[in-house]
Each structure stands twice: as structure tokens, then as C-alpha cells.
Image (cartoon, rainbow, N blue to C red; front, side, top):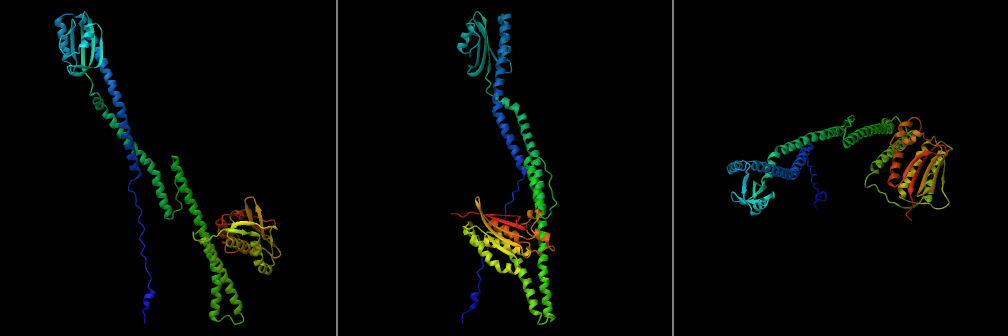
Length: 471
């Protein structure tokens, strides 16, 4: 005999756990500090690249001007003291200066020592002043300033060229540059803390919202983006509080609606089990229990339909649908019920065909729901009208009735779950409180819209707008 345990084997598929989101450990303050540091560093580098050459050129120009002034002074002194001993003593003093200045005394067109370029000597001997930014003196680059004294005599002062001027300037600027870098870091810290504070507050508020605290509110503060963030969180908190309040009210009403038929069914079931109900009353008790069970079934079906309405697997199969025949079939289907209720149901349709792009099954579900809703409130002898007409760009299916109708306040909340049910419970006959919400959701999924209004027949009007047929 074969072993049938193998038939009971169920393959088990092990699903990999979803990866945990990686949480960043870098705070906004840290990033702002790093950004401030980078900005300050770039600013310092750009400042150094621009300012140091300019400062070096300015220092070099100042040094040349100083050398020219010094040369003018020496030439003036030599003109007033024209003895060889005094001239030599002055030149020796110039050569001892710490700035590297070297003096050359030209007498009769001949320098007192070698090292000067010949063209400089000739120019001075010819009675022309000399001012050169770079010249080769004793094998080194130097700045030259020369002044003639007359009769082929003259004086020339040479100072080494400022090749290290940029380094010298940079040594003088490093402290201000470092101070600017420190200021950038400090600004980054202050800015990061300032920007992170409202975001931290927003994160705290969001955490409190997720934990169920709906009373949390944020104070709006500049800048504009932070104000908008605070306003959005406050609006979210208010929306959540409103939504949860409506859900609580809806669940309370639904629980009451569930409890009523369950209580009836339980009472009659206990009576049957205790033998209180005799054989002659049993059919009536069964009919009552069946009616209550059907009421429960409608309520559960509406709840399931609402839950599935926005699901991806909710089937919608749009096609070109002829609306006049669809409405006529609905009229025929409800004929026995309206006859029993004493209500006048008729279709108001044009003599020609009217086509729409929709799902016939879902559209019929909308029409049936609206007619069911009307049958509960329309008194005997009053009408229910199923109308079809064409409008610019779309087609219209309309259900009107001669019942008690809706107030302007009712029209604003007609398609909210349980809104009308809560208003009219105990006042007039109501359904599950879900029918109009389900109809509105179906109309939206069909690519159309629905609106509620006042009917010419004196009751309520529900108008469904649908897209035209593709042809």
C-alpha cells in the first residue's frame, strides 16, 4: 500500500528577511561644520592665491620707491660734499645696511668697483638717471636706481630683487588667514546648530505622532522651508486626529450595527434551544433570523468591498458600454421589489443609444447601490428615476428620488463613510452607512466622478459622470 504521507508534504519557501535600513551617523550639525570648514578653507586659499601676489607686488613697488628715494638723498648729499674721503665713507656706510643695499660711486665714467652692467655706467656717465626693476649686479638679480652727479660722475644703489617677497608676505598674512578659517568653523557650528534645531524638533514631533500623540504641534519659525515643515507636520497631526476621530465614530456605529442583528439572532437562537418557541412560531422566527443574517451579510460585504476598493487586484475591465440598455435592464431587475414597496420606478432615457467607456459590472453595482439606497427612504407612491443623458465631453447616469432628500450640510458629507448613518440613525430608515462611500469609490476607479444634489422630484439626486466611449 503506498505511503500517502508524501501527499501531505507542503513545500516551504524561506523568505529572506528584508535588509535593515542603514542609519546615517552623521548629524546635520557635523555636516554644516564640515561645509563651513570647507567653505572657509576654500575662501582662505582663494584669498591667499589672489592677495599674496598683489601684496607681494605692492611690497616690491614700495621697496623700489624706497630705493629711489634713498638714491635721491644720497645723490643730494654727494653733490653737497664733493671730497673723495667723504664720498668713500658714505659708500661704506651704504654697504653696511642690513637690507643688502650696495652702492657704486662712478667717477669720470668709471665705477669704484666692478659688478655694474656697462650700459648702466654709460647711461650715468651720459647724465641720464637709471631705474631698472631687474638687472644683473655681481651675478645676482637686483633692483637698480642711479642718479648722475654731472661731469661723468654719479651714484648707483642696487638692492637684491625681492624673489622671496611672496613668502614674506605670506608669513605676515598667515595669522589673519588662520583667523578667517577659525571664523568659518565657528560660523559652521552656529549655522548647523541653528538649522538642526527645528529639524530635531520636527523629528521629535514625528516620533510622538507615530507613538499616537496627536496633540503635538510645532512652532513655525524662519527660514521659510522650516516654517513649511512645521506647518506640514501640524497639518498632518490635525489630519490624523480628524481621521482617527472619524474612524472611531465609524467603528462605534458599525459595532452597534453589528451588535443589533447579532443580539436578535442570539435571542431567537436561545429561545429555540430552550424550547420556548413552538412549532407554529418557528417559521416566523426563522424568517426573522434569516433577515438579520442577510443584513449582517450586506454589512460584511460592503466592508470587504471598501477594503478592496483601492487594492491593486480590484478588477476593473473598461469597455464601450451602451448605457440606455444597461439602465433599462436595471429597471426590469428592480420591478418586482418596487412593485412590492409601492414605489414608482421608471427610466428617463433618450431614444437613441448613449455610449460610455466603463466597466458594465461595476457601473451596474453603482446603479444598484443607489437604487437600494433610495428604496429604503422613498415612501409609497413616490418616484425613483433612472436617467441617462449626454453632456459635453462625457456621459451621465443619474438616480433621482422623491424621498425626504438631503440638506445642504448632508450633501457636503454624503460620500463619507457613516456620515449620513450617524445623522439619521433612529430618525429614518438607514442602511449600513457604507453604500454611498462604496459608490463614490467605484465611480473614482471607473475614471469618473459622482456628485450629490437636490432632485426635481423633491428628494436626492446622485449624478455619475463617465468618460465617453473610445469610438
